[in-house]
Length: 137
Image 1 (cartoon, rainbow, N blue to C red):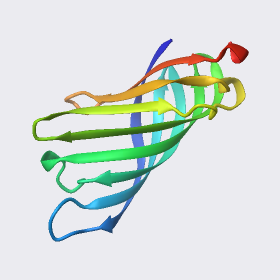
Image 2: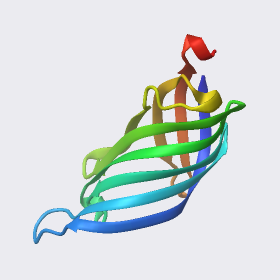
Image 3: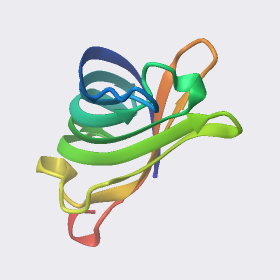
C-alpha cells in the first residue's frame, strides 16, 4: 500500500558536536513531528546532521525516528531509519525504511520504504510504500 501524510516539526533541539574552522558543522538533533493523513500520530527522532548552518553549500542527515499512531486503521508504533542529502549540483532527496521487526500493536509486521518531500511553500510529506508480513495481514 502507499500511504501519504503531511507533517509539522513540533520540536527541534540541536547541539553542535564538531565546529571545524573549515568544513561543515556536525550537529546532533532531537526532532518531534506531528503527522496528518493516512498516518495520524507523532514521532520523536534522533538525528545527526552535517552542514545545517549553510545547507546551500551541501548538507546531509541520518535519523532514527519512533512513530506512534494510526496507519491505515491500525494503531501501534514503528521505527523509521532515514537520511537525505542536498547541495550544489545535487537535487535534494531522501531515502529510508521501516526498520524490520520494529512494529508493535496492530502495526506489528509493518515493513517498507519511505521518502520525505517538501514543497516550495514548505509543506513536508512522508510517503510510505509499505505492507504487513503474512502473519499480520
